[in-house]
Length: 247
Image (cartoon, rainbow, N blue to C red; front, side, top):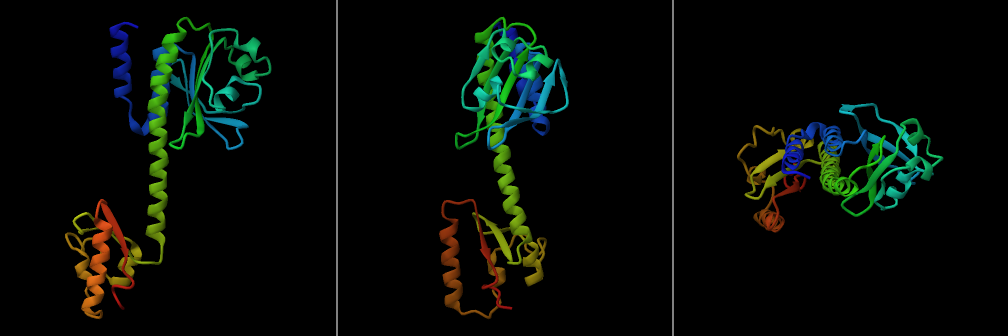
């Protein structure tokens, strides 16, 4: 692989927009290895079907599809095996109608794993002609699959955060979140309903603002001791304010 091509591939990766990451990474990989089709597909829990989440075909993004894994090379990939066939893929998998419909001769597939090491998706390239440089294709596949796995991990993490944030926002308990310096960074709607304070009211404030005068000095000493424990080594902490504001 010459320097010019390596530079071109690196630039195509660096220019990828995170908003359309999976589409753009498929397009970039298909150009890098001269594949007719490149797609990323999620695998269902039973490893029966694969459903594409991005498909590139000769420089264009095309419609997604679902297909059965049985009797296909993708079944091997979903079982944690890298699968490469330079040519004659249809003869090796005669019951795979997708390969016949697409007139495919060469195939490369690699599993994409979660942060826990489980196969959740696959990355596949299909070639209408035989693969001329298998080693180069496999090398680039390893590079691109690592980038895609990181994006999958990030997407999974963001979904968990969104789920947690929705729980916090919709709970009937009043919750505030503070940064490491104990300044209030977030309150949920129930906090506003219970205390009357809005996010703007609490800008630059600490939980000291909750001192209603209805609790003993010992109560607040205990509260701050607990807060200080939570702050140690953490970026932020949350406290339930129902017991602090005795209303």
